[in-house]
Length: 265
Image (cartoon, rainbow, N blue to C red; front, side, top):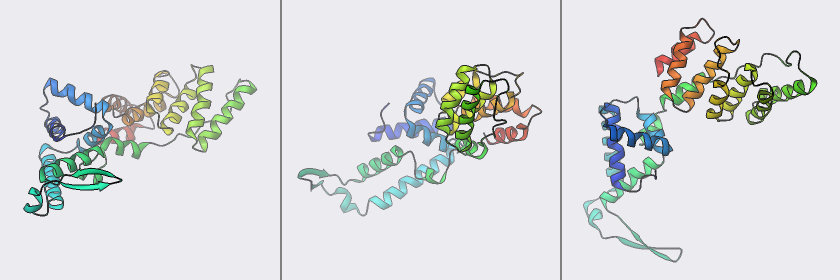
């Protein structure tokens, strides 16, 4: 879906967001909202930044923005009705439109295309904030896999070295090779998933971690923790909540942190 290009698009987005916050979307509007959320990164960021507001707070924000634009861009009634001017730029003649309606619409559209309603400059999306607060990189437990050949242990050392120096793109390449050779090794898959997160590849992290989900694994809770964070990263709150709910009920290191996350979502 293309980004906003006229005033009607801006009005439609405002109405979709207002109804979303009021939980009053029709089936058709839900489908449209889902399509825009998936296809338009700016709209997705704006919606995530506003989702914790009430309908009343949202309408107050938009009213304040319209008033601010009105005051800053329109200086007098004479200026509003003044005919379009002509400017010459790099040999080309261009119209300079100077009406209140166009100025307000264009300015709000510009703000939306930048992923913000002005107020979003001061608001960090709750999902991103929760992820940033809880994302840490687990220390690698050992250097060499017992019983492995020299080739494998050297590869593991390269993976660990790049992981410990926060070169996650390189460590993910090494852990990919280790996981390909030992697909049932949960440790390699775990650190492959963490490396993917460090390299900002959450979808790959999900694939790697889900492949070794196993309640009997020694790394079960670690895998679930980083899988939950990966789902937060892609803003799949429903799936993230399922995982953190499970961890909050488990007798494990992540118990309290999982409870904190659930309270914030």
